[in-house]
Length: 455
Image (cartoon, rainbow, N blue to C red; front, top):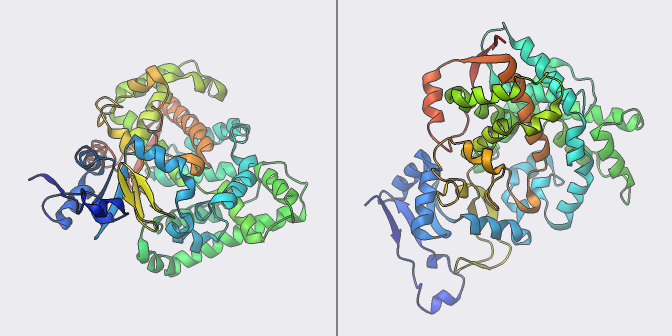
């Protein structure tokens, strides 16, 4: 049997009236929990679609040595994103709490979460994201030109560093030496790498090389903060707007560690994921050259300066959206219920750990025709995701705070890359194999040589 849905216990008996995880159907493939886990690892999107078809929008399945409750589909997204108060965020994100402290957004819920987002609004709303976009365009142009002739580089690292370097000249105007900037970006990557490790994160974060990176990153951000507090009127960038909001709140500035966390969000948080989105999109264009040429045709009359016209380039936008659909940064988000709840005809106890497959809807054929294929034309016509399906940035009030920046920087980066350059990728055969598997994460490193494109 390729798959099986094991009969739930007491589904029709008296016990169905109480919250009991044993009433949930158990979906697995291959006959054992271990075999099912292996199949999930091999192809998460297709596995979850099969589970959703057979077991419904809520079920149990083996996952990394345990059986988890899983919620999937449009109905699950709507339920999870609307019922924010149902989930215990601090419990489910211990790594962020340990590494960044109690005022980190991913560790907050309710009023505390709303307050933090209000404080960060001067740096992350649409106007703030647009404010320095022309400057980002110039930085991207200069850094790409500087990469020409330098041989193969890790393009994941390149874009993360390029965005951070631009941040130090725009949203957080600060003097940061190049070695310190590179170490800051490396720390961010290493910190994020430990988030999903469970208990193994302690060993990951205890490594001397990580502790050294973190100490340098924190010293750098504390130094920038100290300079700002010493001369509060010197700058008028996005970080200055957040500091003004903090100063005007009842009680004035909070603990400095909270202000450093604010600075972290503005200076370096999210650059790794934005880099991966840029690289995935560039790879899709490389392996689907008809779309690269369509975008270049749109860019033919672009002067390389006016970023406002990029918003009207439907092929560029469609390719980015299709890449988001096929290449989400995470397939599952972890939640823990604060109280008993009912969903999909099932009742789930308080304190239950839940895997939310918030991007499963990306791969449902009733929503996106031929969902496992790269077909940007679906977004050329509509220009939008179907409601409650886009889980790339999460959803609800916990929607990624950096979404505006990522979705504005990505088309600018790609426009500069595709108009003026071509990339010669190292190990194309491996990249072609990876790109053929929807849902696969971008490799930790992508090596390629940036070359000038004949115009």
